[in-house]
Length: 303
Image 1 (cartoon, helix red, strand yellow):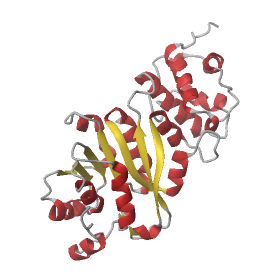
Image 2: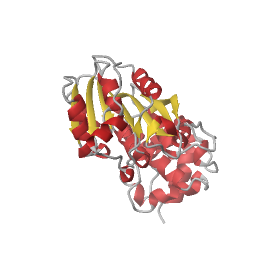
Image 3: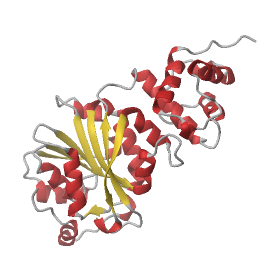
Image 4: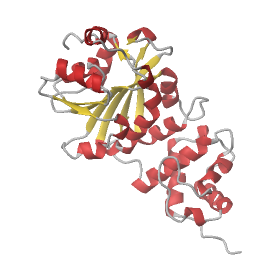
């Protein structure tokens, strides 16, 4: 890997400063940079989408692998730096857009094999971007991302662990999460007040279940964790409130069912104890509940 650019020097030369309101903390640690690039396991046959390229520190390392790199960045000041310093790379395409709006399905249509993704994610955009990765899961082989350390802990927490989260349970449906390297505050400019962690998400080749079941599982998880101190028997009642689920998609007709009767039938058919809390359920149980929701909805009881 070639000598990485120093974002501090690039910014100084250009008279620019990191935008605090955009959560810009640029990577300056060569050790962490090298770990991210190595975790990608990328070569000339790969296509990498870099989420939030910034001034191009990681971009350069990814391009040095020989992979085709699509560097996504919305900050026009950073776009200018990218073009000035890396614009001559034949395997690099700079894409000016908001990464939250990235459609992996549309990008994948131009390439014959599954994509890889990488990025130093702004802390306030971590969940929306990971949700984007989940939505594009069928087109993504691997994602190596920098997140806040406590988010990494929640992503990797197993069922029953107090740090188990809705995002972690949703990711577990489709990917295995592995720690890569810790990134202390001094690995960035400017230094954040929190520690960070690089994690690798390896998305499964085969779908976890038919797409309607996968989408229903995401909706169940989102509802159950929204009121995580309640039993899942009580927290799942919000699915019948008339609004669309926060994540995922539920089958048509669910709203017309008797909520108590429907939920009890789910537990009876799957053997899941309705008195448990969301953080105790594992992947197979969420998928089992979702399958019942999609394939065996109870009839509306007659008065």
